[in-house]
Length: 378
Image (cartoon, rainbow, N blue to C red; front, side):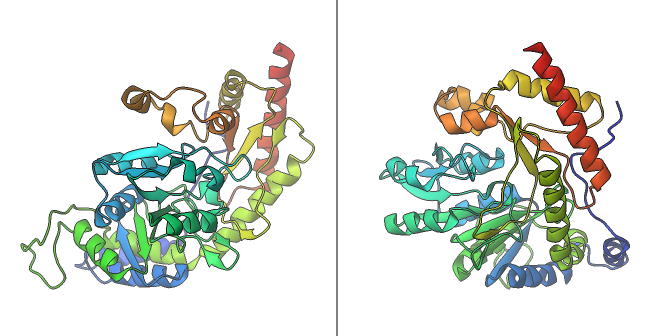
C-alpha cells in the first residue's frame, strides 16, 4: 500500500535549492569556499573552536578514533541501544566495543554501570545522545576524566540539544554530528566533527583528505588517509539548513507536543519526555508499548500500521544482537536486560518538521485501532 504518512521527510525550500545551484554554476564543486564557510558557521553554532566536515557521521566517529590512536587491544565502552554505526567505527579501528546497559528513563548509557566495565585496556567511552536526549552526558565525562579516558561524543542525533547551558557536541574531547535526511538538518549525506583540541582537528582534517598536510601539495601525503571529504554542494545545502536550525527545533518540538497530547489518554503506550534540565532537539518520536505486550505483538503492530499506510519502524534493534555481533562475540538475549526489554517494545512514529496535526491524528487513531485488534487476539 502507498504510504499515507511517511516516517521522515527533509525540509527543503527554494533557498537550499538556490544555494546548491549556485555551487553547481561555479568551478568549485569540492574543496571550495563553501567548505570552510560551513565549518566556521557550524563551530560557532555548537560553541567549539574547530569543526571538520566529513561525508558521514560514521566517518567522523572513525576519524576521531584514528586521531586518538585507538586500535587493536583497546577497549571502548559504549551503549548497546544505538544505531549500528556507533559499534562499527570501533570495530573498524580494531578495538573492542564493551557494552554498558542503559538507563530505563533516558535510554542513554547508564553512568552508574560504567566503572564496573573499566579495565586496564579501556581507552575511551562513546556515549550516545539517543534520539536527541543529552541526559547524563556530564556525568559520563566526569567518570572518563577520573579514569583518564578519552570521550568521543556520538551526538549524531542531537544537534541543537543542550543540558543546562551546555550544547550537545561540547561534552567530549570530540563530538560527531550526522546530516542524513532524517536528521534535524541535512546535507543529503554528511557529518561534522567538533572539538577544542587543535591537534585532533588537524589530524582529522588530514585523515579525511588522503593524509595531506596543511600547505602541502596535492600529491604530498604525510600519513595514510581516506577520502572522507564533504563536497561544496553538500556544504552549501548545510549552510542554509544550519541557518534554519532554531526553526527546525521548534517545528519538531511542536510535533512532539501534538503527539503527547493525542496519546495522553492511550494507556497502552508510554510517550517520550524531555528531561527537566535539558532542551531536547527531537530526532525521532519513539513510543514504548506497555510491558504486557511482547516483541511479537510489537512487530505485529508495526505490520498492521504499515499495511494501512503509516510508516513506522522498530527503533532500535539491540546492537549486541545483530547477527554479526552474535557470531563474533557470542552475545545473547539477557546480557543487557534493560536494553533488551526496551528494544522489544519501542516503535518510532512518523516524525518530521512539517508533519501536520491531521497526519498525527491519523497516526494515533490507526495506532489505537491496531492495538485494539491485537488485544482481541490475546
